[in-house]
Image (tube, rainbow, N blue to C red):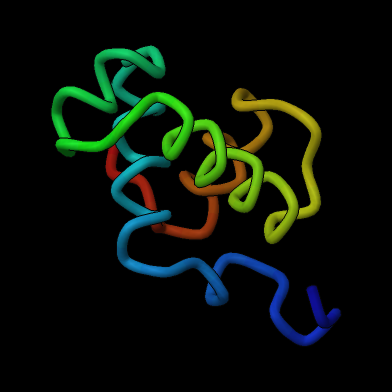
Length: 73
């Protein structure tokens, strides 16, 4: 992934949806069911979100998302 495609503004609409559902405490299976996709696809989206945000965990991603105004409290 190019370095220019990093940071909160680089997230796609679907990646934002996944991040917001993670912030609500949903697991991969619940997110998959909610968005009508496989758990494998959810796992892929989560990996991309972590990479784009430059973090290593879901907790860090949600924290950064809140600070960036992407995830409502």
